[in-house]
Image 1 (tube, rainbow, N blue to C red):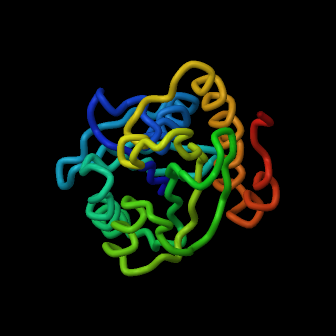
Image 2 (image 1 turned 60 degrees about the vertical axis):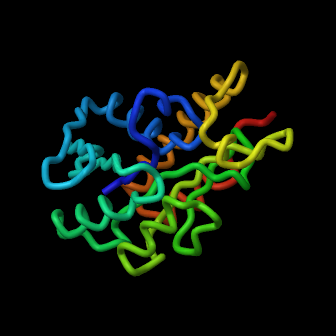
Length: 190
């Protein structure tokens, strides 16, 4: 299962906090996977085959700080252990144009990750962090992460998502270690 984090609603569609949704949307588009509202919980699910492997794509629709509710329910529903799930999310401590695969660790101030850790009772799950950078001015962090990408940032985001998707395919085919070794350190040179 790949869980992309974001906030529901068109007003958040192109915001920095929604790069997890954006990554899943791009992956789904590349593999002809359609998302449908899952009746038993507040999420959208897309399922299909990627590189000869069955995959579930999950977008919690509970807003970021309650993402763990949907993730926990879907892990149980699909009988998936947390180490077999990857969570894709934004990371304010990484510059725009960068991404990194990791395993475990704390929430790092990310409310969606904190919610997942609390809901599933472990921090031991793979993650793909996509850098959004910090605000250049003194804007409050909550306003910044809910602001849309602008101008040149959109092209950078598209390029980094293309690279990150290659890494996700590597994760699906060969596992987290290969994805970490092959893709960490890559990114867009600004």
